[in-house]
Image (cartoon, rainbow, N blue to C red; front, side, top):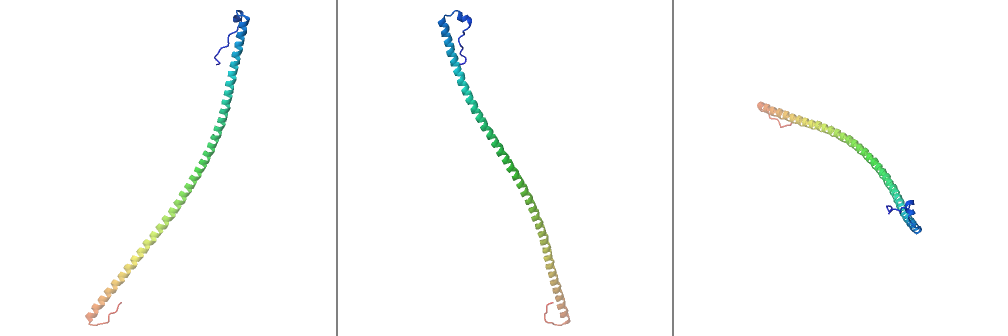
Length: 155
């Protein structure tokens, strides 16, 4: 409606007009001016309301942004704490693993030593028994050769 033009009432147009025509043109111009003023006021009020709404929305978005930043900071802090906990757990697990490996190695060495000792003891017993058997056999043979009979005794 702002594109509506007010009737031109300049000196050239008024000179050829009667008083009634001038008054009518003047009244028309006043009415159009009032209509335009009302339209401008209406649009201004609409724009002011839109500006207020946009300001409120802007404040709301700023609050949301701040809240998002706070949540993001909290998440970063939690992530860093979890990273530290994981690193601590990895370190503890590594230490525990090394300790267990050391224990296993020591136990393996002891088991090997024990097995070797047991094998040595078994071999020693077998050797002693073989020597006893051989001595007994030689003694028996010697006794036969000599013709002496002794009661069987175990060496």
